[in-house]
Image (cartoon, rainbow, N blue to C red; front, side):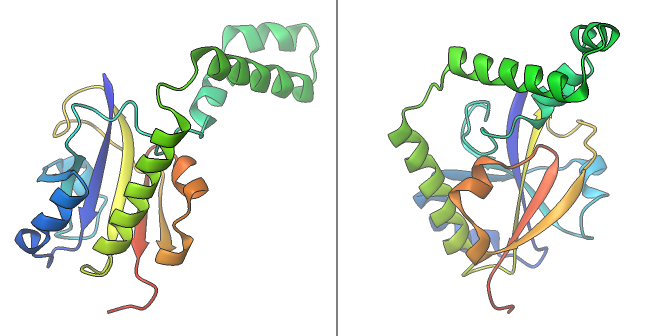
Length: 188
């Protein structure tokens, strides 16, 4: 179906007081309920659809992370055939990386470098401003097969990053199904 970016905020967050900030950065923060995911979060954690986009398939968040494509190719029939032909794991790794690189180059990005920089800057500035108002904000990228409220999501892990660790590279390399929790440098 599609990628969607969702977000979490602490249960005591006053959402109404943040509406101006959401509007300024063109964010939605529309409440969601997904019992499966909520069971993996802190009790009472607030859960939202982060953006106003129809979907987030063209987001730059996680756009440089190719781990899922790598795993798919690693488990493909072609790699099984290469193993039967006595290819080494290094040769297979090189072949997979070449395929991913070639596919990315052919497909190209729908966004210009300027648009990519603008989107990343918007996310970084948004998270930093939001962290002046809340104790933490979580971001999650997931490929949905059904609707957002019924999707069965299993978090791989939760990664905690302070505000100083929010970098362009970190956002471009975000992994799917990892909850990235950003926190202020100094706790409340």
